[in-house]
Image (cartoon, rainbow, N blue to C red; front, side, top):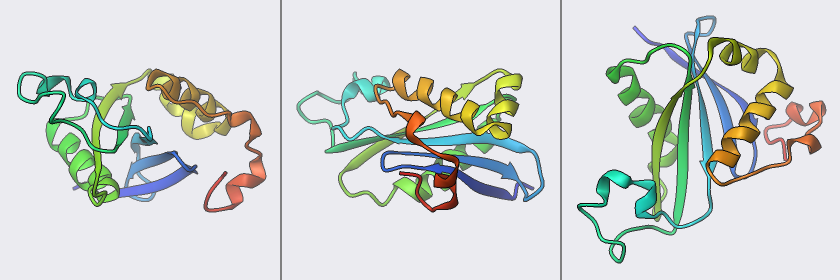
Length: 152
């Protein structure tokens, strides 16, 4: 039985990174990235709704993206748990906010190095943020910033 443990690695105003493990000393299941894009949601964020919704009727004032990075296959039950229970626990209480989640399988070597090397994690996060139309200059983060609840 899964005993999901979340370990927050990075907390910024518009971006957070969590390691999700199976138990305190268990294997890393995935990384969860939360990106607050600070823009209204659009049908482009939900391409599967294009035949159901209209542009005029769709959208809320903010859009947040949850991204789960993993190196092994994740079954549908685990995906539902990660999205509905874990990400949903952070994001469901936003009144005028839409959000959704993507799963991205990454190379095992990259997956392991993210947890081992903070600068490498930040480099990979920078690439992902750009992919989703956001950016952050991680060069300003110093190691001592990680002694605080928030790194910015």
